[in-house]
Length: 125
Image (cartoon, rainbow, N blue to C red; front, top):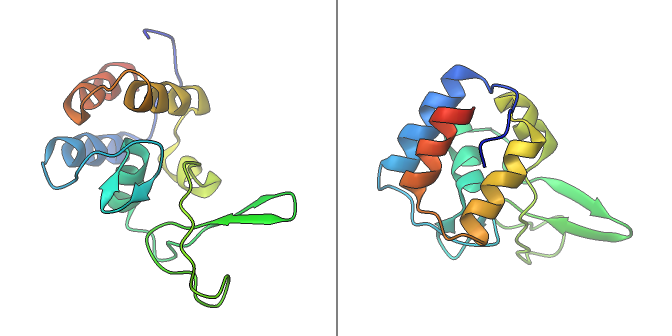
């Protein structure tokens, strides 16, 4: 996993690595945020502290919607989890999409810990 990636925003990187090592987040799989567990990308969404934390992602005619919270007016209050990092979060962090894919694989397929993922982010991003 030692590929060349575009470097991300240094301040966001520092905050993300610190958050991953903080012990404040419980690591989860396959989803940004589900049942009070976050994947590393869900932690990134949290540390950016965006005002608008419900994102709309369109998949054909179905709406795959959610990040931390109820949808209320959108889908009658149902919660639908997503594992797709919203584009504007990726852009704000200046996260290389290839690095995003690597982080997903480390978390969901290789069961890397937050500490291991934080180490990787420090070295490669």
